[in-house]
Length: 245
Length: 275
Ligand SMILES: Nc1ncnc2c1ncn2[C@@H]1O[C@H](COP(=O)(O)OP(=O)(O)OP(=O)(O)O)[C@@H](O)[C@H]1O
Ligand SMILES: [Mg+2]
Image (cartoon, rainbow over all chains, first blue to last red; front, side, top):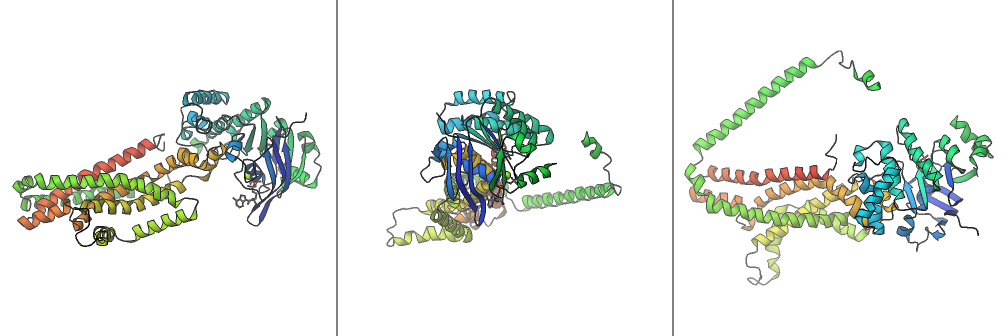
């Protein structure tokens, strides 16, 4: 039996006004797969991710989450978003809530989980990302790396089927990048399906199952990390790798 | 490590140390002189203008009554205008155009015309719809005052709340919606608590102004503090004795109110402010 991909982009077109930002993009993320999207600035990587949980509307094509259409007018967006965990470059933690409250608020308000149960689960998740001793801290009291790990726990608390990571280490001081990438690597090892945008090529190579190169709103190349980094198939792939050196 | 490297040796060659010292001394001298002048002026007034017996005699019932009339009007208008302001503010940021338009028009009108004008429109304008003498509310002064203050201050608080909401980064709404929250849930749980905190200072200032705006209510024949001053003045030809009471009573409301607002602000900031 062939299971459907967890995320499917089918001929997706996205415009910002006149600008054509995603051009007939086709992409599928299989269950337990870690897909790493790379590409130059402005190529549409963030937009690609934001369309997957409908933070952006698309103008053509379809996007499905576990087979359910999220892009259509009848889509139950609030339900489908629960299956898609999103982690942002700028953390976007809720500053008026403690770490525990940040993680527990989704299950409590969206799924109706009782407070005591949600709190316990939140503290467990915080322990999993190495923050078991910071549960009562407010975001302003945490380092960037700690905040981003809370944000990952917050997304995990909804038991998503797939996690989206949009340059989640770009806003961090270099010495804090490792702790966040470590958590992501653990997640990948545990079998989480991930669609990740990153400039961390070491991570892409080590953890990624597939690299997707975007350029000017198009997926120009995709393949296994080894083949992509050793011998890109396209000229744009070569140029992208050259600029990294 | 790098901090010690950059932090040291920062005393610039042309150190403004001497000038700073001199400015400080001038500042202290000036404020001392000013304080002396104010205290002297108040002393002269107290000694020459204030009648101690009358000062005691007019406490009760005149000023006590006026004080509680003002307090009651302030308390009711305060609750109503914060509630109303919440609605106006939410209307102002609504995603439906007509709602937004109505809220905008409301704010423009009540901030664009004087409060005194609005009070007169309500106090004299509304009863004019009834035949002379038929208006059902016997003593319309206080209700008209509450309606006027509420409508007026709802506009200002609405603007404060709109500003508070707009100061919340878009990423907050996006993060909340990404968890699967509805727009209403995201507003309630994430955006509004932060907006409220952002708007608190402005709302607090507005409530202090509301207290002071009650001085206009003498025009509606509300027996408040200013009309009490005027009554006593015309009966006794003494102005400074009632003025002293008026000052004491206004400050007795506005100073604790200001403290209360700062307390709310501190409490609303869970991390205890910038560290
Ligand atoms: N809200 C918006 N309104 C208008 N144009 C936008 C908006 N967001 C993105 N764009 C444009 O869409 C294009 C793709 O942007 P996107 O943020 O997806 O790129 P990116 O690949 O994530 O870049 P980066 O590596 O800098 O994050 C860019 O040309 C950008 O200017
Ligand atoms: Mg981006």
